[in-house]
Amino acid sequence: MDTNNTNPVPGQVAEITLSYRPNSKVSEKPQIVSSLSASKVLRANWDESKLEFIEEFKVILLNRANRVLGIVNASSGGTSGTVVDLKLIFAAAMKASASSILVAHNHPGGTLKPSDRDVKVTEKLVKAGKLLDLPVMDHIIITAEGYYSFADMGGL
Image 1 (tube, one colour):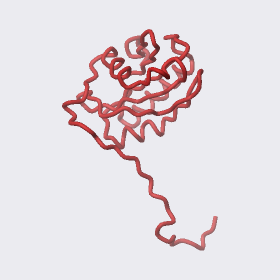
Image 2 (cartoon, one colour):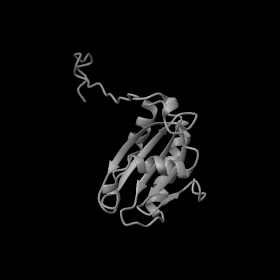
Image 3 (cartoon, one colour):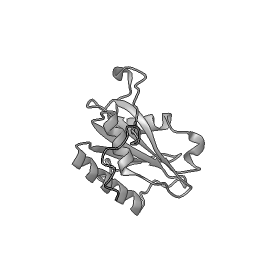
Image 4 (cartoon, one colour):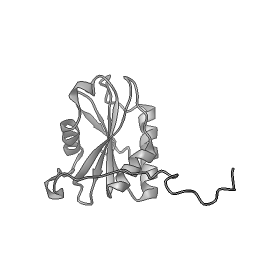
């Protein structure tokens, strides 16, 4: 490590920005009161043409009244999986001043049964959320035929 340059020139260090620009009043946003209402919000914001084609992971950012602040398209993968980066998920939630999050992904193959990887990712998300005081309210798996809620099934 070069210790000779202890006073960097301004502009040598990149500024990181992540923006959140609300486009409507919070009172006009949908309120999540159940896994059913969450699945309806997700379906309304999911590209149906990709639902049975590629796996995607989304995050619903919620305020204290469980109103939707926004939806983050966290990742898009292949036919059998996608990468879930917890740092990016929680960075977006903190930037939006979310009080909690709800995560979701689709299973292009149509099965509603969570995989072992789904369970492990959910456990990691819940644990990280507790540390950051940003609870994970649910993890929903969406298919063309229905949805699976970890919260409804006692998986949180």
